Length: 385
Ligand SMILES: *Cc1c(COP(=O)(O)O)cnc(C)c1O
Image 1: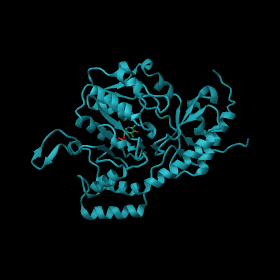
Image 2: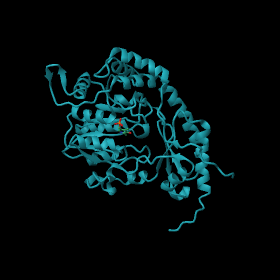
Image 3: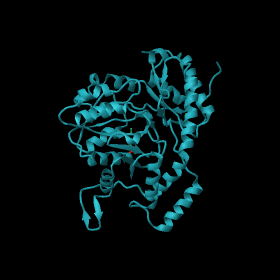
Image 4: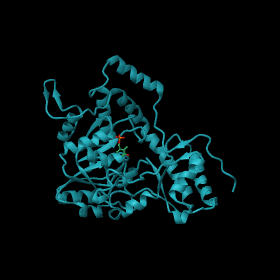
């Protein structure tokens, strides 16, 4: 096989979707003209309306970021005590609970979809449990019906972290219609973004109203402040960026789908690599492309592959390693014991997110696959261990 050259520029795991600068300028002119920059302005309300339609949810509220949205969901739903969640997620999921004086209880994940394993949830329930906080990891939907069943049986609230699942549908319904509330993140690294931003969806007008109050200091009107809220508003400029990005998002998802299929078709021939495929009855958003490395079969560990890829200017990411249950702030919780989380601990050592964004060319995806194959076949470096 011919020597394969590194990329001339670094290829990162993602690149934010950027709207046309001139069009953005025009939107900014209108905002400048109005002199109204934040506080639930016209642009933010328009984005809320358009996202309700795009995500097919009854009610949606915008926030300054997904983390603030999730904290407000915990407050609005009056959670207390313990909340069962997954350790295989971004730090924000567990941290939101801590910030709300709730105790995260880590439940193991399912090897197939890497989401919280509904079959393990019930044994984690105690008299202090008030809710379940599952994550649709990498945009693959959780087993929502089983989770609803458990929640109903035990009188628990459910908040979904759908930070990865913008536009995803399962069981004939958009993800934002399951559970009591669903959080979306609109951070620049997500498939749809407002630079920084987030949202909560719910089916109750009352919940939306309370979330809106908490987002703005609990202020009802000039002379009435009803409860201790926070400041988690999305400003007009970010909302404008959101309106423009929203127009591009379907095309972006389409491009990512094509790249995903290229990855799948080429990687299929490489021993020791696994990846997720499309699920029946699910509308996917192709937000991430994750491979799982079987060190024995592939011939090297995930960590070593990740290091080798850097030599080719490819910057893959170990999502999600370490697990939240391994963070110093959570590792002494009883549920963080690796014996309680065997699947999550194994999976965290296997996963690698490869570059995936619409601006990447199909040739780039093919080249990344060939490099991964080349690295495997040329893994001749003598081990000094
Ligand atoms: C990005 C992300 C968040 C946090 O969202 P922000 O908008 O960055 O605050 C929460 N959970 C998961 C799984 C995420 O990936």
